[in-house]
Length: 206
Length: 381
Image (cartoon, rainbow over all chains, first blue to last red; front, side, top):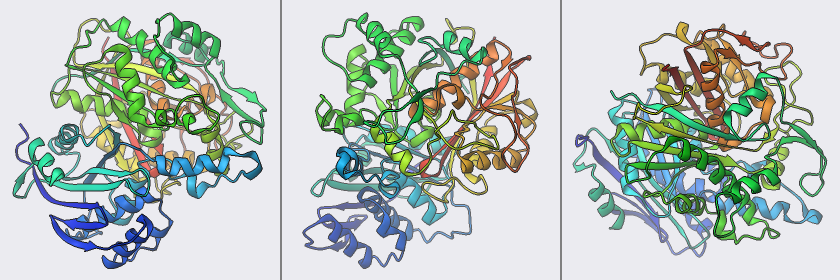
């Protein structure tokens, strides 16, 4: 069942390194995530000023998606029916902690809509949808660990019911400076790597 | 294709601890919204609906908990326990669990909260619910802003269609916290009066507290009278703005189209729409545009936010449950708080609770991140 789908390409951002299909695109020795993701953004020639307003999770997810989708040479005037199915462990907790800090003390009470809007994990999906004009299916799941089996089931469901032509899928986790990881892949009807649980796990672990 | 049903259900809210009692109050046009002036939660007074704590604790303690649980866990466990009991489904490895929430135990981040910060991880919430009932499968937590509750129904259907599960229980809820109120207030989205969806004088949202649970199943035996078949579902993004709804209703329009594409019915077969209707200026206007683009402008429509406010992760699910009872009772429920039309396209707001033969309804929701979901339900009895 559903063996006709393939993993067309995959991208990883982890340990100060950006890679596409396991060729390293960018690596640097930045001390902080903020410095690293900014240099990666410049290196990838992304040119999207909204990037600087995003929270850490959105910056991470956006850049990983951008690396994959840029590679697709999409025509934005066409309807590209690419669903987005993301997952992680920490939801939007990195930004949640910032919003909590802003309301913890009544003496220094400064809740801000620019922070609060990012206290939802699916905002990063919205950011990617806006950039690539994706009016498509989207969902954000929370799991304890990378869960290939659920991602496989859900992507297969969207593809086999024709809700989507392709699925941008994977794991985007940001839980503090030293705990970040994006692993995204594009599931399609064409490609060389079969879309199976084992193949997803193998790519994730390499 | 296999028929998939939304069947056994429970609603825990200020209007009652069973779906029937909640629907009875809605029938009688009783609102669960109350005025709160408490500067330790929010500098300004606000309206909300709250699950009565004493009754919650009483009902929860009947389940013999062996340790301490957060308020949200108590709400979800109490609600879900009723659905598991009435369904009589054995919790084996063919049974899934979906948790729908936007912020989960976010109050655990507060320095004054007795629970450790780790409890704020949503997977931890999933584990607490799973372990309480001894589900065999890990919880799937859906956190997709304000569409989570109705999206969870579509997701449950999709997992069953893929052959992963035969039955899926969905538990949903969010608690009223300073975290959420201060955030919506910073957007100036909160109303200081009971909310008035689609009305010319609407001034914003009330956030309310609800926990709703359902069983989604492909089993056609032992189903309650209000059971519905899910005949179409779709969820599309606006690709427009992360916090403002689309000015053209694009994502909602496409979601409804996507849901219809799975059915053989036409827009003329929709007996009513259970819409999102948060009572913000832009959301309600966007919905009116989308419904008109779909030629649904004449279809009777309500927003239930005037009864218990916007219950975030639970809203789409509790509104589905009320819609199911609406079909069973052949009754269109009044959209509370509405007097005169305050959107630029004509929509047919239900002004009076009215008896009418009903078969099919459309449920919609929209949320931050540009997400929208539409599901079409049909009654089976």
